[in-house]
Image (spheres, rainbow, N blue to C red):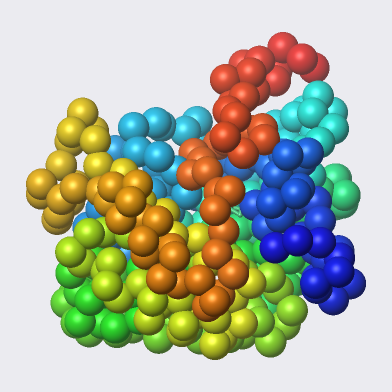
Length: 299
Ligand code: SF4
Ligand code: SF4
């Protein structure tokens, strides 16, 4: 996605300094995450609960969990050290909207204390429709939804259960509810002018042939970008919850699926998966410089 020439001004204003939404911006601007959302409301078969949400992060790293107050302190400290830091995202380590009190408390304080920082969140979408109004209240211009299927028959191979209306729901029914919530949430965000990015985890033999359908469905509902990312399967991280022996795609398989989706929703290829407390330019991780003890030392 190029520049101001091929998009309306109000959209360009939202993407031009967001590193995850603009190929150009990712060379100049940085984002950071704060890990204030530990809980999750679904089970992905590829999730290894010992580590961060695989929505946005590579497995094998554990983020430092923060209270909203600690998170705000950290954002303010990082923003004064790294002026290119334009975006603050909440992406886990669980789901940002599963128990949203801390997520929204963090956004609220930031809006008051650092109004120039753009706010962003990433979610599996299950709780999204009910929270769209709240999201808009804090001027969150960018939302990422992880959508791995648009057919519950595919979905039931990826999601063994969801937690819904205080109960655990399993199988086809669970995947159907998740799918409906994801589509509804995406439509609602589009209607309100929030830019959306869809992340899809490519799982060979499970959703690879289905990905073109996902791409069409999200494009039809106004998704701004579609980011197809590989399942990361590394033996040292242990087997996944329900995908024992599942491999990730090869680089060629990933490219083939991405190429097949060209012409659908805009594909994003500069994306780097990032951990829930990432700090820095995409592909760079400066989180070690900004641990809580170091921030306290800076004061
Ligand atoms: Fe794990 Fe994220 Fe899936 Fe929740 S949404 S089960 S944290 S990968
Ligand atoms: Fe937002 Fe995801 Fe980028 Fe984080 S990695 S700033 S949550 S789009």
